Length: 153
Image 1 (cartoon, rainbow, N blue to C red):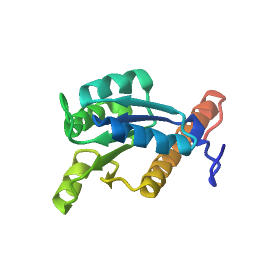
Image 2 (cartoon, one colour):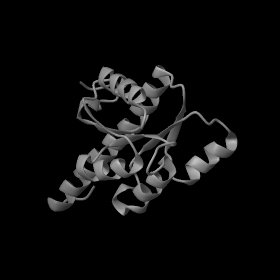
Image 3 (spheres, helix red, strand yellow):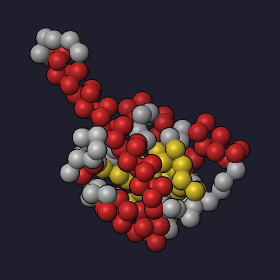
Image 4 (spheres, one colour):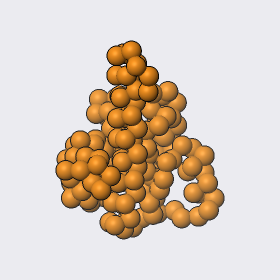
């Protein structure tokens, strides 16, 4: 099912890294209502890193305060991986100060949503980042095919 820009979000893969089970269920419900059925969850940053490798998400919803490995450390590991520098990381946090927002972006966050999460805002931000990611992937694939076929893109 394509959106207004011709992007099929049903093919998107979203990883929710969140230690609170109710927040995981809420995120999954919102994503599934958007037609995104490939959703996986991790309870902490360490588990999240393993799932990034095995699940290969198109977007990560990331809580900051978690046991074992917090969201900031998780983000540092993801951004250190050259192949994942463009992977959108949407941080969910209850902390809402200008200092914290600046620090999140400096640490590699693509965007953030304040807790308690507003469903419509979450949907809009997820849609924007997934659309961009999927369109960019299609563009890279077409460019690669053109180069292999002898043409230029």
